[in-house]
Image (cartoon, rainbow, N blue to C red):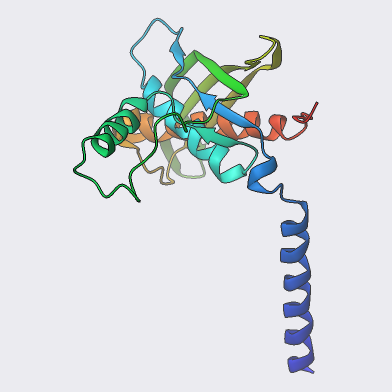
Length: 207
């Protein structure tokens, strides 16, 4: 009986994986997208570059687009220049004029980057204790532009939130700051990014 249950579970897993492969767009069919570094519209110092990288990573993992590098294109140019110098094996050197054009460009702005820590008092039978609440909110305003027509094909502002009361563990990410504030701001940012990516799944990019 147990062997039959295990066999059935494996069969269902295989069906699920095959279904996922069937619905995933082949790499050649995905639209090409370049992601520009996000602007800081908050009036305070924030890790805009790290937020842009987080969006790029999430988009790559989602498999919605073929992502094209633009912010670090000078590294590609250096490799092409090295290939033309004669120092590199010609059969492996990158060719000039082969960089792909982007069908779409993503621009973004961080419009809210907020962290708050507030304390209170909790009363339990025979105990009086402090209660500390930590909350973070991050809003990303994102646009995707058709590079052929200049038409805005996606525009949305999504807010991500993260909170922690009393105990619990939030791991900080260095770029977002140390301690609870850094960890919560990073989590709130990622939640905003995920909401955007889920919204992008509903767009017909083949129009």
